[in-house]
Length: 253
Image (cartoon, rainbow, N blue to C red; front, side):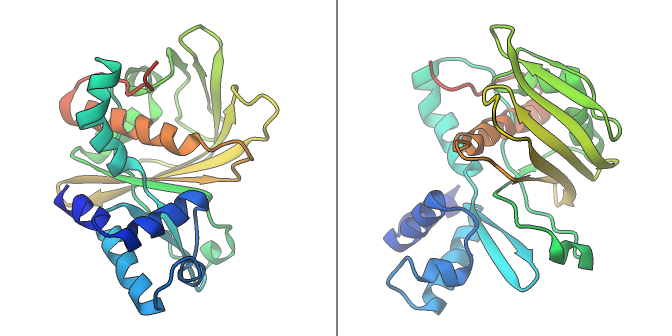
């Protein structure tokens, strides 16, 4: 947490975060054009932001793309601000990580529109169950009243309902590597006319626990709230796995 406050205590680094908030997934060359600073200076600031987990990166071919990682900031809000605004609400998942499969097939893949990562004190088996079993997901999802369907194999689908009983979200597994990777469709019922987008969740061992990375592709216009939704979801997941508490980090009101 000290690293987060140190990283934010500089106007140039805050300007870089603002630039990524306006348009996520920029290269170093693109970010240099947004700030009056040398390429070396921008690269140094980006390194500090990445060390604080406020940004995450994905490499596609010879290009390295930078993404705003809102999860640590959401954790600060949840810790000190939201309890005063929203009262006790159910709590979920927190920190997501970028894991890249470095084979030549990756070089032709498009860059994601959104990348988040988190670190969780848990086993690989526990994280996999929490991501794939409906009854567990229902306990930490920030907005779903119920979750039906497990993610066990390609073709499996999950349907989520809102607190008022209406449809909220549908996901269908496209490809799956057990306990390592889930690729699925993302079909939001709150945007009925929007085309389906695609998500990839990557699990990786980390000292003391696991790294979880979420990549979101093909987001349609009007999806600005998806970043915050993932942050709240991940906060609930992290809390559930580390404490056993079922907490939903719902938006105030």
